[in-house]
Length: 456
Figure 1: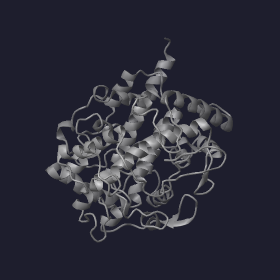
Figure 2: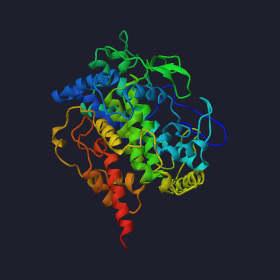
Figure 3: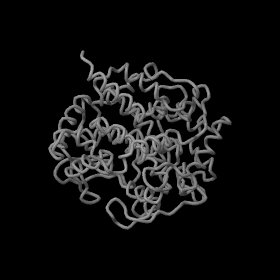
Figure 4: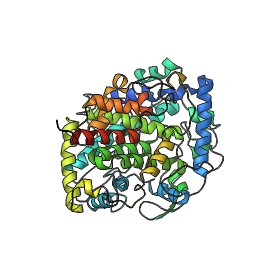
């Protein structure tokens, strides 16, 4: 993502698929983590998961499978149409997760005037959004063609290191296109592989309404053009979901009083891609997992993740320091706008995230979309986050600094979702696929409040 800040600047919104031309160290780590999707054909469990992925996706998109969505189905479809536009310049479209009062305060400073021009809260917040988004976008983009046809951009060969990832597990590209009767280049399929649901599903429910800018639109013009054309854009992983979870988790950490609501917003944003007919359930889970994995490594100041160079993006050498500065600036702006402490203003919410029971039920429905177990050895056990991925705890300690990393990792372990999913192969990356940040956020907030109330 090319993100800018200032009074009124030209934004670089992700309206067209981006091209990954090489594999960085972080790209390779994510490619390896997502690679189990390419070997699903090898086992009965894997083939069952592929079949379920197709059925669940179609059922959600048409409404045959009714989820406990945050809005009535027709209204949620309209939200999905608005969510097709990515406000990567300032995360404006995710701000409703902050609640009625804080969300309005945020949008007063950070908003899109049109599709190309946007404003930002402060330079520190803009730079943090920019660098974070560029990191996760790079990793998401690197997977698009790699998992579609084993290339970096549809045509150029990948590195030997990347090729070895698939060789080690006998992985096959174009898993979705091949499994759903639309292999690359065949009639109705994409040119490169992993054709999308609007190409493979038997029927796609039309969504007609207004988009993010209140312009008349429908899901066809976003899926097949002219507003956006995804016909030859490989499906896995979901770039929109990567953005949605990246921005939502980042906002949750910056405003921890709205941690759970922001996690629910990330889940909604990803799920809306299914409603649009643009992505499968597995695409959403892949995007969520890589965004969460990358953010944890950024928050940990992992040397591989800081000090990197991205086009038109200010580098960040100390992510923790950058986060601290951005939080201080954002807190000042929000409190000045709402006229009170954030803790007070955060409770002022009459929007769709105001009912915690609904948030919890909806998030739970997206945890693994009911897809069957692929790795049974991990299905009924708690994987120790502290041992597998100790940096994951920063997803909580960055928001609730009263917690130790050990306490945070313990909470993540205790609140894990069902194991054994198509990415949960026992690896350090795989465990991120079963983290339940909605439940973990509640436990972390409660423990932090208890420690604050106890004399030290």
